Image 1 (tube, rainbow, N blue to C red):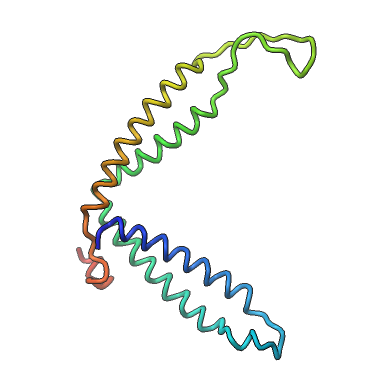
Image 2 (image 1 turned 180 degrees about the vertical axis):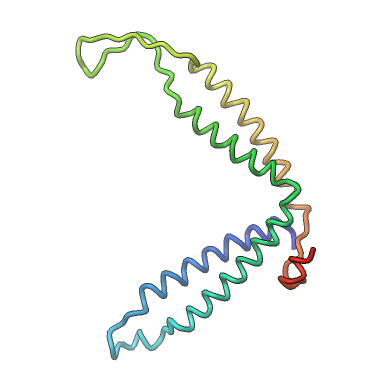
Length: 157
């Protein structure tokens, strides 16, 4: 299976697990004699939940092993995105501004002005886009041993 498909499968499993947890939580306690209660078996759903969790853990392990060679890029991508978010929140207020709807006027200065901030964001966004492109290519060209190997075989590799 290609890595990008495994990532989609992981997302789907996370959703299924969330749905099962919600169903179990909402339908475990029921009014005795209720016809709807007979249609749902929380114990069976719990068994399914454990199976899905086990499948997700195995899949995450396989994805992690496949990502080993690009892990640094994945971390860098996350840090660059966090830095862009930080820079976009940076206060770049400068010049004379009235304070709290009063006659008081205060002068603001900045170390990094709005233009400089926007240039920094643009530079990091270019880096993010380049790294993301590399990761996308990797995800679409990398095969993982999913559905073909047992957990023991994955660990031995």
